[in-house]
Length: 291
Image 1: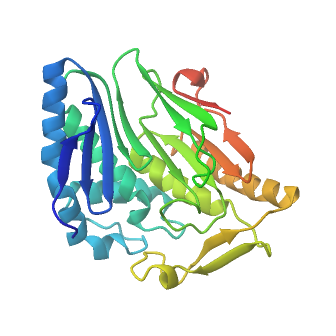
Image 2: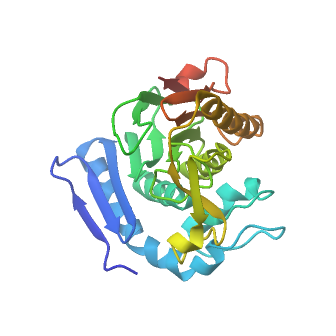
């Protein structure tokens, strides 16, 4: 485990920064000053124990899910298993939902018993959101993390069910089986969005000479993906290959939407995008995706 948890306000005096080992969260609450202060104290108290609890159960959380549902002890680990369990028919470990599950746990602590109009916990782009009646929260979308820029916007509204947002892709901090630059998903929780984004990004794939892969374990000895081939480089692809890969990912996203696992998704690869329309009629109130 890496050092002790660092809990401090950012320089703007509005946002809380929580950092411990690989976990790096920016959280913000909106409401009366006393309520916001109490919310931040609650978040900090919860956060201090999270990494230790995860490390204690890491061996279990790195195992692929099978017929028997794991029963971890820690609350974050339980969120991870719950988010990944619906996807157990394919290769997936609970680690697919770790960042989103941590964000959900911090947000739950922050909002417990508090009167807040809005709040969020952003764990490296996997974001858990609290929305009071009549409120909304917008987040920017970046297609290529290597060339950051505002490529779109996603809005979560209080009238809809989405309370979690996550992004995955081969260019991100996690290893990916696919070639998507970025797949951004909205779901009912950040953990659910994290797991779905990981698997949809895996589905944006094809065999092509421009795609370079290597066993996950050769890149990171402790990877939960073991010897599976992960993407390490993607050269320029022809238009038909880009379209085929994005269409495969979009089909996966649609299947998840039909199963009630995601609300909407946006997929990006080499300047091209696909968007999954929100599931609900009038879905702009719950999850609007703008290019």
